[in-house]
Length: 401
Figure 1 (tube, helix red, strand yellow):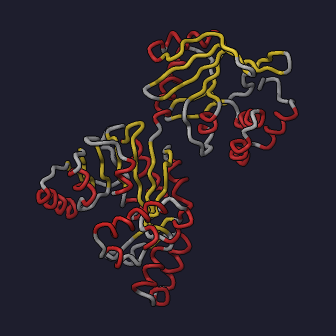
Figure 2 (cartoon, rainbow, N blue to C red; figure 1 turned 90 degrees about the horizontal axis):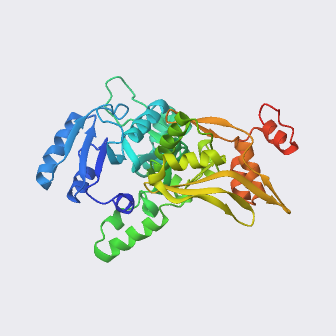
Figure 3 (spheres, rainbow, N blue to C red; figure 1 turned 180 degrees about the horizontal axis):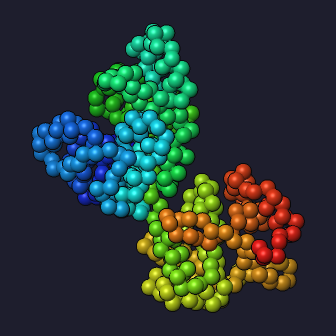
């Protein structure tokens, strides 16, 4: 709840508690004034939730189904999605990927998605505390959990605990694969995992002191292998929806453009945070852009010059996402100005729309030229070696130029 309070928008935002069981989080969030839909596979859990909600004097919406199919909900339907259960009961990676993709689909651009995971070593840590002979009595299960994280059903009618135990290293790539930006990953039990009885017996200032301490250390990756649960707090990037809309309109209008800078790197799959959007075009394209998006103009186009760059430059605001557009960009080299528009081009699919970007290798060289070595180093492992060498040697094929 401390994490949700820190990252959720204020009430009465719309929340989907997907896989919320008997409604522990849904009821507490409804108490705070949120509009909560509780969605779960279990009819019995939903029955319990209705009873508990009545006792608490709150109203919830209810729906039954599986987290891998949220087709009853339209795109962008919720400001928040809590996925704090399904991902550790879906044994197959394809199902976990589908559940995250569905949660991201029904989340509004700019919205928050909180996803919980059971950690890879939680089963063995639990056994050490409560069932120390478990690895001896069930060596195959013990080995399987360590090997691939799976604790499958033991028999066809078995109702014992079934789970997928995620390695901490899986969490961020899985979320990013669904097009989400990871804000933070938290180790929920903090410093007191499996030894919290004394802390839980505390009240008042002593209890709050431990809450504060565990909140302070929760983002520390060195803790994440030694807790039972991780919580990934993610956002559906607003910039993706903005860029998709702009790129589609520019393509339909026949305006030449390329997305450059950090946004281009992100579109190539590099894990970078996008703060604003940078777009390159020619002089004609710049002023056509302005006529198409006049209402969004913060700084109308004019010819602007700094010590190192000059171009037809304009700045636009798309609902809080700032886009800077450069027409006929030039860079100073000595006493001369030389064209510096990117030479290479490819397309990247953004939610079904093709977006024009330079090669990642050309972006790397631009980072090196500007002294942004950390960003260049982050991109280098993803570069095509032959392309990078061709750019360095200046022997690109004529058709590329």
